[in-house]
Image (cartoon, rainbow, N blue to C red; front, top):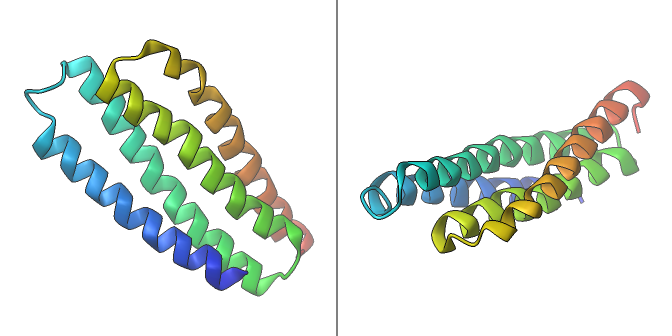
Amino acid sequence: MERTLVAVGALSAMVAVAAGAFGAHGLRGRLTPALLEVFETGARYHMYHALGLLAAGWAAARWPGGAAVTAGWCFVAGTLLFSGSLYLLALTGQRWLGAVTPLGGVAFIVGWLALAWAALRGA
């Protein structure tokens, strides 16, 4: 499972870089400054949690057990919900998508807590 987490983390980082470049070069002048900032927030948190996925993969290899794997999948869910909702909100202007974003934030928080648990408990 650790190899899967590292691979998904690396691919997620690749997508985060592409999203950041798209926002910086493809969306300037097409979105309002406020919506561009929303998109950039999504890309920034996307990259943070791609790195978190890499850490979860490393932790799963070092301390086999459920907590590190749980952390990794929480980071995946958080990225889809948090960053995904911000990307869609910025691109479509559909404000209701902002209601989904906090669910992703909760998944991120649970992921970091699970990663800390894996480190402290070694499982």
